[in-house]
Length: 298
Length: 273
Ligand SMILES: Nc1ncnc2c1ncn2[C@@H]1O[C@H](COP(=O)(O)OP(=O)(O)O)[C@@H](O)[C@H]1O
Ligand SMILES: [Mg+2]
Image (cartoon, each protein chain N blue to C red):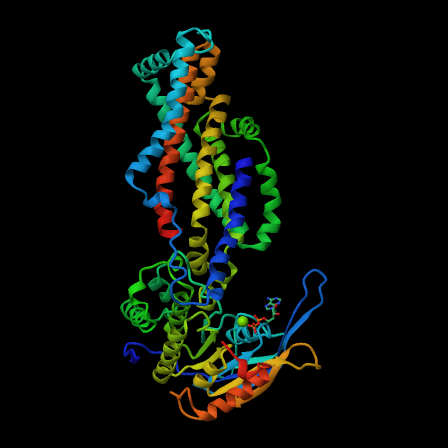
């Protein structure tokens, strides 16, 4: 939830920025010079070597952790039933892989996340657009949605199990709930703060309703929507684990709870590492898409 | 660099504008008192006429333009274009706002496209955009984004966008304000050229008395009555003699210039813009 708040804060800051951008020309007295500005951060243009440098910098900490882990487990700093060796985690992965469970768990968890995320994002977009565009809808819906958002994720799980059963539906629904809120918050906030002058410009040139939305409002909020989607994806993994912990027979959350029950600490670690890798990978994919989008709309 | 009539284009004919007893009072927010910005504005503008609107900053010039374009509704009186009431965001008008208001995610070309009438074919539209960018001397920058250009360039894009409409009424709010002196003169000449080929009715807000006298058929001075009711009204209307293009050094104009500057409360000997 703290994350949600941060996005809405970014969303509110944005129009001021663009306001400043539009105010500038009226003050600038001169037509020439002064502001042939390119505000892209230097990193985008930087040499390849620098990017590699950043990558190495980011990889340093995980490598250090791996080394410490290795030392701590093999030198007996931490007893084996509390900390498995990295090797045993790899072996656990191979073992599960040979039984066909590893691929299955990863696949089913990823599938749940992607479907739940997609559904949630659509619901969040539509709801956010309605609340962001209509004062009436804002007054009528925003307080209720806000209250629903305040409900902790796990609280939904028993109810969804009761209503939708132990199958896929309840899990996908829970993830969709988790994904919908960040998208809703960012979209509604960003739409409310689209530069009024640009909206008026659109009206002056004959755009109304859907065409105004498509020409001015939606393009203006693309950057916020993307960051909302990114948050939603992170939330989706969070809610996936919640869903699979409560009632499932497959998936990474199931692997966590089952390993805990069997005292298989190696598998527990495996599940955590896999969640980290999958979460980071999907986030990086969205980040790649974000870069492309911002190049066009930013 | 002269403007040739785009044969492909059916620009709308110039339309007469009539303001009758127009007043605008803004409701005070949160208990603040109401604020009368305009009152009793009566003005008849003939089809194809160019009217320059001058007045102190904050006196309601932009607000008056908004009444004509239908982006705002007067609290008193009526505005008609061609005898019919103005409707919200009236499409018989094209506006170049005081700020450039370019869509930051679009190239300059795509920004000018916003002004192209939806009835124009795709190919004709593209051609007109290219032609207009050429006229405002921005062909080389056609594929840049607004954040990559200067304030003066942005203002010329906004101007091109308004021209693109080929409207019956063209409303220009300080269109040359951010331009350097040379570009400003060039753009003034361009306006005269375009008006000769596609004669729209033009209402032009400016702070520059010389600009008003070079371009307009009539100069309308907006201002408050020092000890009258609140709100600005028309203080004076000056008919500018002679046909366009006018000689900027004309002696008769110099006289009018001194008179207008005097009315604006500027000492003409120390006037520097
Ligand atoms: N929407 C509005 N609400 C309240 N006051 C406004 C609004 N629009 C303009 N005003 C007021 O009207 C006055 C005239 O503004 P404006 O027409 O922009 O002046 P000008 O263009 O002559 O510089 C200003 O004092 C401004 O504060
Ligand atoms: Mg103004």
